[in-house]
Length: 267
Length: 337
Image (cartoon, rainbow over all chains, first blue to last red; front, side, top):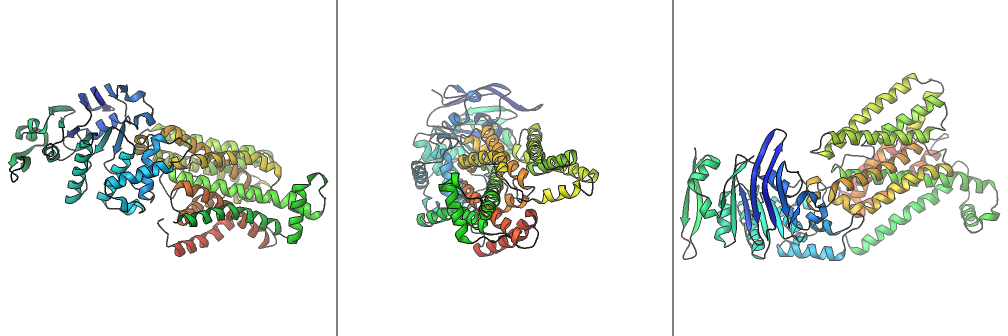
């Protein structure tokens, strides 16, 4: 059974069509990457799956229920969300922020219980950042903030996590760290739908042995959908980004050969 | 903060307003010995049927007590709704009057004074126009649906300026010897005429508003993550925001229609709370409640003993509160605020 089933979805801001007749399904325990240039509609598509925008055409079903018909609390028990850029406001403690992930399970006039808090602490531990729990989250680095956002999504205890460019604005090490976290989560049985700017992330996930499928988004449509090594080739990269690139295979001391894209010049 | 420290702080927040109320029974132009204050309270509470009709009893029970109770409610209402709005609009510069309540209520009160020449119709008019202003802001905010929070603030600014202009117009046409001074003094705010009947009329919206905000206070934390994230976290943002706005509006209008426009409390008391207990609304809302109540009662006491005639609240809140705020900022170094 598909956890998320997008059928012939279309969306437009006014007269400007963002995407049209887009279809895909996400099964348990796989990563689905949306890849495409800036402004191609990746974030809008994710917003539609999260029920933030209504579709112009087609349907999005989550666990066999139409997204638009689900109340926010129900939807938040199936889909959790790691935003691209979290706008920090008040300096809540990290633990308070992560505990907010329990909002779908806490009544409107109630507050989270001790059990909710220990669940939040567990999530922080799982990501190796329990030492941050009492720090004001406005003073964290970008990479730490991203881990906190992932922890918040984990305490929502959803089968699907939606990530919008989870490694944007991160340094070299944190980028790798987040990709490792994603790998671990998928291997533990979660499904992840993520938008990414970096086609190499798709290869990274595939190289790590995670069931990975990607969709190349171009001109409001999917150029191709499939496993990274089948779909990502030099011709498509040129069409997608207008970039001349080479896909190379790295022999890594006896372990499985790894594929990697090296950009050469803008066409 | 350790658990023990938190408990002590909470007990302090509970006792402080009661202490302020008791103090205000003792303070005033007419000296009443502390022993008599206790005696009057004791007699009234335990044997109300044969209460003595002394001048002490009259001053304490009929004049100072309702005034102190109303002050407590007004201060608490303004501070709590200010804190709630700051969280909801994710903006620490927002105050309880942000959606135009104060200007609407001010206009309503002035209209009542100009139309009827007395202060009698001020309550209903202030109440109705305060609510009307918020409804207008809300409708303006809904015209454009992508970023409702910022549009609501903008709606509030527009509505405030319109009602501000209308208020100026009323001042311009008002009778300069009778009505104009009444309007001006009303706007400066005073609890001097407080009676139990005021407490009954204006107290109801204030209590409903405060209780509602106390109930929903954790969800204000989640709402302060912004609409997108709050929804993805499972909050029915439309409904929750509406509840916060309705409660804060009830509380603020109730406060404004008895005591005039005391804008300052709703902005600064929540910040004093943030310095003391942090930004988590689970602690901040009760802290603001207590601080707002204490602050207004104390300022009201000052207003009636400093000079021969009473100093309006609107003037003293800013004069006393401003330096106190700076002192606290220096003392706590802002904390994590």
